[in-house]
Image 1: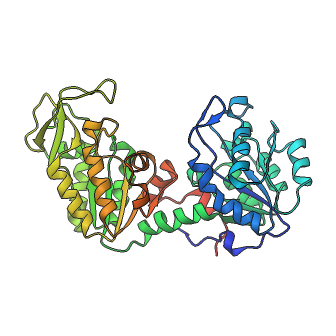
Image 2: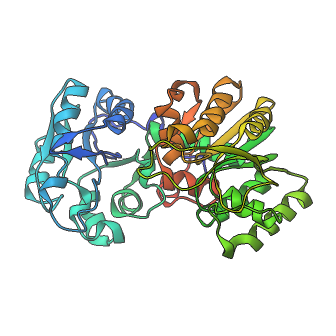
Image 3: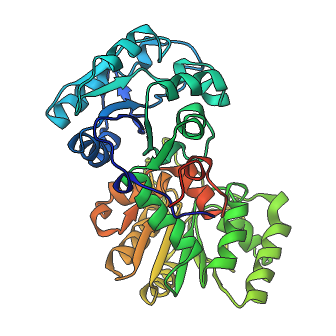
Length: 402
């Protein structure tokens, strides 16, 4: 995987028109932004382009308008909030064609250091199909393309891949650079011992990740709902726990693969079990702790038990690099969140480089207040999983190599 990409620090943008693809896919409620983390994360790259005297044209998708203008998915509120965060006007180029007459006129009128924001790129049906027409429209606006949207790096769309292939200069922004440095290099070139922790509900979602990480890491830890398919593969009774019967043989293969490669594969040795799944999800539940080899047939495991928490924490202590993706249990329920909290704590206390691979683990770490103790929290769930699978990400590949 080519990870040595040109970044905004390798180019000069003074007096040039710069199209910068950001991830402004923020949650909106009645036209108000309810979580602006993604806007804040984009500021360093935007400020750098402004300071260097570029004409900064921002673009992003928002939600799934499916190729037609949907006023409730307009980026207008983002332009307003970005203006406040930057302390300078971010002019919104309202244009249902995204790159229509209004957007072109706005770009023509720009002075060095000005910022405009284009309308939702997914208003155009070509966007998600990487159609040439829209890629050409976007490329016609700029001299330089900067991709700073890791959240969509695993998708080949017009606004990240199509336009990059047409622009003379295509580089990555600071956010993308950080993702490549941490996630990409952790997998391709880790400081050892390298411990990977995988959780989440389904084995099926992580097949390639498990396979790839077994080759790269020294210790692979498996928790969450998917651990029970592994425990079943070892011949244990798992009661009414989550299981994917079609993947039991796959789990047997992975257990054998770990042994063959001399890797440590750690599975839960005990479980927090309940009679029936909480409804609503955060309702009070009666729990019982059982060893993994003595689980009652009428109960289901919904978190790792105290012995497993200690075992996993111990494995993290001696690590130099730790990657974590997926919670250890039903962490939305306070009673069933102990395992996820224990893992977050172990990562917060280690000197290792700690990398959280987006999605639920990022949410868990932030909710539990351990965010600032991690070396890196990925901004993309799907994209970080594909990095861990060892796949080449189209949005990264499209940028110019150093």
